Image (cartoon, rainbow, N blue to C red):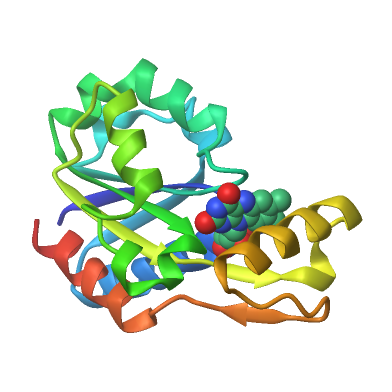
Length: 175
Ligand SMILES: Cc1cc2nc3c(=O)[nH]c(=O)nc-3n(C[C@H](O)[C@H](O)[C@H](O)COP(=O)(O)O)c2cc1C
């Protein structure tokens, strides 16, 4: 039975939630899944897995430094297996920026890392203004105002297409 490692880099938990849905789908397809936060993945025995997938969210235009460091250290092992990467961000709420080829963060990220993930995905993230710290909320509202998104300070909106997440889960099970 294939053993899959799903690694998530999250600030507010949404990328972990996406990984939990992927886990359900992959387990439903009869494979074993281990879910690890990127900090814990640093000490995991990567060689022991058949497939490795990393998911990471965007904060102020970037994936976290931990993601770059983890990939820098481990990309050769990851690359020797079936593998994938997905990015979570709210720019992906716009259909024209929602694919791996058109999402500006993912396009830029792939140019910065030595690894070429075999499977790629972009998922819309979650905006939760009440949960944000004051200055984060003001900053994101300003960005949303400039890009035609919601600005009401009580906005909680999930742009994630869960069917797309489930389809990616099936792809990971098949790869
Ligand atoms: C402080 C902060 C900064 C963010 N910056 C961006 C950004 O620059 N571009 C973007 O598309 N989304 C941005 N987002 C939206 C997040 O990517 C989105 O909320 C995502 O669901 C977060 O996932 P996580 O909970 O796994 O960290 C930001 C969110 C926060 C809270």
